[in-house]
Length: 369
Image (cartoon, rainbow, N blue to C red; front, top):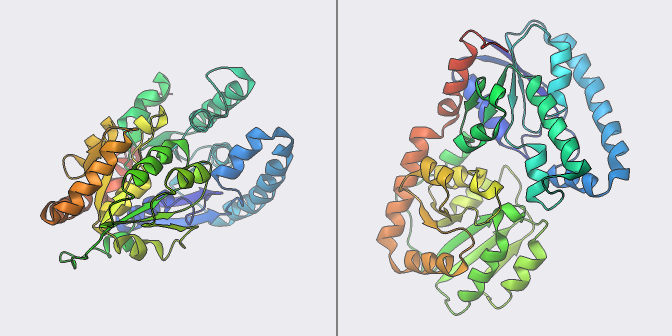
């Protein structure tokens, strides 16, 4: 099949799209891209909801991108399917207009309404929440196939959408798998890394408290990468620990080697509704790179990782600190987790494995709408 990857996605900010495109190409599909990244990340879009008078800026930026997308779509020629990348709530409607008779796949990794609720922008009611739910409904209604990353997100879709949805894990790209080393040197300190945007989903308040509990343990060195909503609070909570290094960010092309230089990759620890339904990108990437993965014990993460990861209850700082101490004490256990979670990633989370269900679906007759 000849696929068109279409939209304002940014593979540097959201590597999920890169996994899908790599998977299609590695499966023998032809992929052409018509992409004009919107110069606004998730945090920027959320900020506009906090300050609605800024929404005309979004409309102007989106309009400029769309003008280029329309020109690119005209040059792309005939395609068999269109894949609209992550955060394509508006792009999918343009795709539906331009490709009326072509199957359209929407990567619906997050809902607009769910993200706003998780970040404390809107409750279950109110004008903002109603608007965001309308945006979600219109986006889902424009797609022939909808991709979600966990069964929990599948269950959250409207009943009429579930029949045309496919669960596709986020996965990881080849550079992450390339970092794996079966034999790793044993260092005096347990090297731990967290990479994220410090949103409530990540539960960095609990992580900060756990780091404070570890302040008297020089065997555990932690690197915290990123900035975001809860960064200042996390740093304040962890201030007593002098074995923590704070890094504003690491470039995307340097991140696989950077993370692989650590023993343990931290996932998420939040208690929000969204945190109970996701498996974050960093978990797949850390597993692919061969780090031991330490994350919250939630149904989707347990289902994806089995017994290969180290799990702690969401929101339990003391359990998190204790798990890190255990890994620092037992290096054989650490190495076993590193090996087993990487094997799990090889079996289930490569780009080819991620798109297998998608390819099966698009080659079937479309379900009734």
